[in-house]
Amino acid sequence: MTQAPTRRQWLSQASATALALAGPNAFAQSASASAWPNKAIKLIVPFNAGGATDISARVIAEKLSARLGQPVLVDNRGGAAGILGTDAVAKAAPDGYTFVLSLSTSLLINQFLYTKMPYNPQRDLALVSQIADAPTVLVVNANVPVSTGPELMAYISKNKGKLSYGSWGVGSQAHLVGAQISQTLDADMSHVAYKGEAPMLQDLIGGQIQIAIASALGAKPHIDSGKIKALGVTGEQRMTVLPQVPTLPEQGLKDEVFRTTGWVAIAAPAKTPVEVVQRMSAEVRAVCALPEVRERFAAMGFTTVGSTPEQFAAFYKREYPVWERLVKASGAQLD
Image (cartoon, one colour):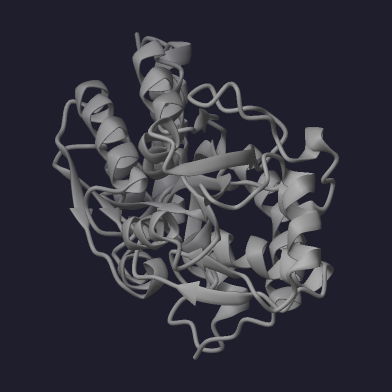
């Protein structure tokens, strides 16, 4: 007598039949997703080593390696405001072994800034998880006679055409914030774009520029030594690493540019199997929840997030028009 198949056997047979009807590609994708990962994963950082984004990537990669049982290798590919490394991921095989960990700059803002982009973030990338919010701190040279955000706005208004602000690159958050302040106050401030944050801060200390927007990681040593003054931080929450510095919104500066922060996130090439994206997102969220990871990020002035692909997509949709408006208002445009 033939024994009736069990429910588990029936489901297995049904699944196999469905895959067979779907064709050989479905078999390959299913097998690939279920076996993932079975080799090293490359995590491309589109900025040079040593900065906050690079440090973030190495913290995340170390924990992911332990959880996934495969090496997660950080690959720095700096250049063109994050475009080169991000484009490499956009054009990589969507097999689940190449990801990008980057800032809002290359994942969102650059598409409004550059007239010619080699990739379209919305078409060529799959959003995996927002890792952290990255607020910045408004700083001034120690000799500028102000102590708060509103005092700086008044000082700028009284010194139109006489002040300069620095950024770590055209189109960076630092540039957009400075441009918005200058335009709002009709202040005619000069923008000085540096190749990185370190030279910008050195010129701020030396008085070649008077104002800058900086990361907590770069600015805190100089704030602590009294070489520069911190007036406020962007976003709605104070930084753990600079608890004495109030946010700009709580000082009454309510413009969008002061309430918005940068962010750090992970994305994959478009068409990466959904199962792989979801698994990677789940592992990233677990890593972001670890106390030691939260502490490392807090020391850089970041606040860990850890979102699902769906949550990240909704957040991205909200951020899109904000940065589009800010770039347009700044007048910045690059080829």
